[in-house]
Image 1 (cartoon, one colour):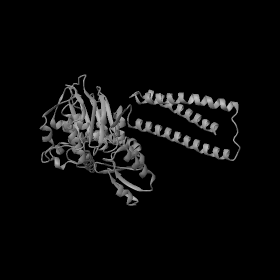
Image 2 (image 1 turned 90 degrees about the vertical axis):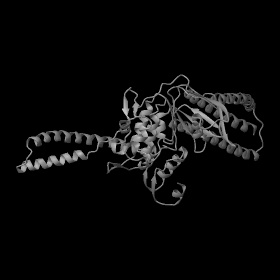
Image 3 (image 1 turned 120 degrees about the horizontal axis):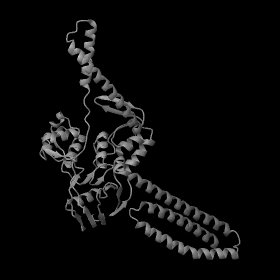
Image 4 (image 1 turned 180 degrees about the vertical axis):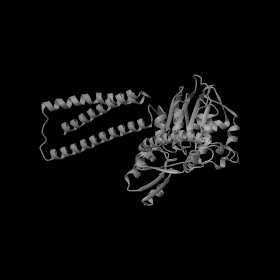
Length: 464
């Protein structure tokens, strides 16, 4: 990516540019491309990226190209209108076909010019309807094993590789039905946490306790590991011929593949012929067939098309088990998770009560407060320096009684305010997921810091 950007080209072709980039890098790239005078032609399933970078969408649907002058939000609205119109036209064609079919059956031989013309029109209509390929709708509806009261508990788990600390005393008890996202830059240890929970790696200290009814489904970045010379239908049949659904019914392996968007022809293709997205979809299907009550998904959105992503999101929103997901897809995270593990690096992992956009907004507020505080301190230092220069060329005046009284008051008040500030900072670090309280304490801390800065500046002026 760096080489492409530094090439100086004014026309960039980007094929899934956000895959495998961490969230900070995606947002940087998003801003870079949006601000530059560049022509872009890109393929991506990142819906926020599409919305913020692109001003035209080209859709390929059943071999046809459809253009939309606008961003992704406009595309979604306009596509829905186009499909509704097409469905209305298709319904009219089917009704007409039924009427004409009755006429053709009554008059098999077209003797007159009008009859011959009507017969030809019927033949064209029949060919048009046959060419309308049925749209495969991906539907995910599989059974989930019952979950007990104890799910998974992590007690002061620590893990490091040499001098690189990944986790330091991480403790968390998973609750039934919660959906957790994991956020952090590449290489900070997100996948290591998943491997520890799966038992694929051993913690250096601490322990992980798994409930007796826990059944994990793990979707890893490596993807499906099967014999590529096998047919798609055989991959599923090797697991089970009949698959139980959430409503108590059962499906054959072939019908389940249909629900996941694999046509009868595609089911008899060899795995080696599948596209990246089709492999991901098959991999997800094999995991869900195990009826897991705890899903661990490591970058599940890579190579999935937008329609499949929307169906997966709908399924996971209604999923009754626990969900732990690592993803660079911000739209995906915002729709699904109710809180996040924030990997800060050097073993520091924080639990934030909100989705990805909530976290970014919180970070921006903190950064803004720090900038304001820094600006005030810089202005105070400049003001003190200017005052000192003025005083150096004048005869130093003795403080008045009123000024001395003010100075004494400040020197008494400042230590109390400093102690209160330390107390609030300690309270803030212990609030956990109490989001409303965090906002309240943060505001109080900001006001207190402003008051301290104001008194310190006045104290300097009085002493000069």
